[in-house]
Structure formats: C-alpha cells, structure tokens
Length: 127
Image 1: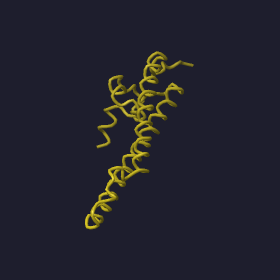
Image 2 (image 1 turned 90 degrees about the horizontal axis):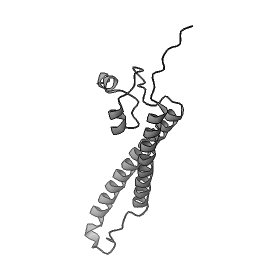
Image 3 (image 1 turned 135 degrees about the horizontal axis):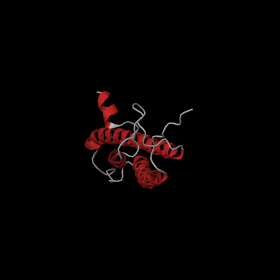
Image 4 (image 1 turned 30 degrees about the vertical axis):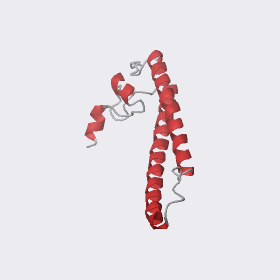
C-alpha cells in the first residue's frame, strides 16, 4: 500500500495561524459586545427634550439605526463563527486546505482572511 504525502501546514504554521485567529476573535467579540451595548442604549444623544415635531423623524432615524446595528451584529456573529470554525480546523489539522481543490491555500491569503476555506482559484470559479 502506497502512503500518500499529506498536504497540510506544519504544526508551527498552524500555531502561527491559531495565534492570529485568537487575536482577531478577541477583537471581534469586543466589537460585538460594543454593538450589543449600542443596541440596548439607542438614545445616548439625549434627544428626549427636543420638540414634538421632530419626534417622527427621530423615531424613523432610531429605527434605521437599530436595523443597521442589528445587521452589523449579525455580520459580526457570522465572522466570529467563521473564526471559531477555523480554530476547529487547526485542531483537526485541516486548516488552510481549500475545500474545493484540496490544495493548500497560500499563507498570504490566510494571513489576510484567516477564516478562508477556499483558495482564490476556487473562489473565482464561483463567479
């Protein structure tokens, strides 16, 4: 039986990516916490004493702002999940392997987008 060479990053490389991802994860979680605080405290500007004629505009503006904060929070949660999945792939030693081509994703791409699961070659084929 032939043994096939395993196409993966070294443990040293994986440790480097794990550190990078852990830092990004920490900052992403802090950002999400900040968004959550903004959503629970929408009127920090103290517009309660403005004239009633502006109330309707304020309500519309507050609704729009809340929707935008919700979208940002949802995007941030998805980013955190992607980073957490990347950490699982590091533990499984499958990190950095393109899920389409099976080839190693270049380190430059992983440093820029540490949760990437596709090489640029595979990503461009999607369009």
